[in-house]
Image (cartoon, rainbow, N blue to C red; front, side, top):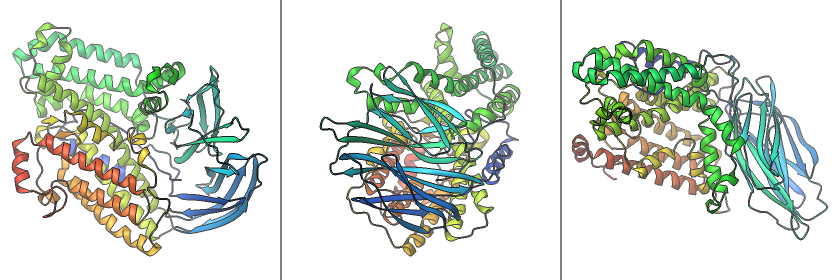
Length: 624
């Protein structure tokens, strides 16, 4: 189980020229030195892994400490047909150490398939924590069926209610860590709501949660279906100020009203009038975004309370469409670890910046011109339905503005969150007393990732002429957006799932010394990846053209970051056994499609055509 932390988002052009470097350094400082308003308790690296194999009534359990610190007080319990036995107690595991334990289970009375529940308990940060694994124990005859209940991965802070997608009459059992209290609410004869409450705070816990269904088939044998999802428990956020919805709606109405009344005068007089209208419109746009973020939890709760998978058309087939839909709805509740800090701590500062300072950024640094400013044309495209005079706008610029805002709104929360997560996590690893190869590797890796995502986060926040990073165009095809978005939550939660299975039954793993040696090229490749982001600088952004970069590793190949990442995945799959080969191949195909769609978009820019002729290779110098 892996302990981490978080923070979240901002979307729209950033502040005054004099403040931008301080803002970037602040973001990087939060990444490297921790979030000042996070809880004081440490969250160390406890990455325990459990594998269980059974033959007849004999079983072998293997616990591995894949983390960078020692784990004490480890205990193992096994349960079959409500009979729980203690397999091991008070075991200590050093970093990288594995221990095996043998056990026997009491056979059930009737043949069939039964859930074998394994519980690992351990001490961490002064608390007794646990995680569970559910396997299928076949006795005499194999009886399984396709799940009738579906749920997405779950984010939890304190308490929460999430929706379930279940067929009527389903007998559902939820298997969660001992620190998670839960109850299942049935409606219409089917499990519909799952109420959860945690006692893990202030730690963050990433652990499996299992949905087990049982039934007796026509021949009297026990049949079983097991579904595994991930539960992420974040610290409780007991401070921070939100903005009242009424106040935000007033800001929206005021901004739209000012734009409607004064846009014609602004186009005629220019100067401060244009900046004033753009300022009012920006306040309205940001307020809409804050309404969506703060209201996401309300929408999610109402969605699962009043809608179920039986509300979908019959020909949809229920299960997979509902699973995808419920995953997306839960993600955009903005309650998980990717967004919670922004909801609780950054809504007010962002709103205050837009109200108090953004006018001066527009007046003295951005200096928008109505004829060429894409956000001005985006504004006119919206108010054109209320004012016919506003229909004389550039559709191409308006589309670019809308797509730019979508890109910023989607990616900025994730990348600010990840930069803080990885930086804080690396700092916590530095504070621990255990020093090993794995701990040094973990610190360096998370520092590199934190720096990389901080660069991209700042790229999404800023758009200033002085930085030469104005968005010129945005990817316009469905394929281009799809192959990019499937690499990020929430889409990656189910897109890659069908490929996360072994192609062959035999599992191969490299010797331990080879795995340690593999960490060196992985760190070097991550360094190339971060070097690529540093070369992009303020132009770092997905799905956009903000100017062609030819420095750094882009002198040698056109996609150095993608090449480095693919090589990392190959090493981790082949040497470390971190991914199945089928999943690794899917990663490679998706990133090749990302490179292809990006180039198709960028070839609309003559500068990129010249760069393409100078650097002919996509991924490898003088080869490909």
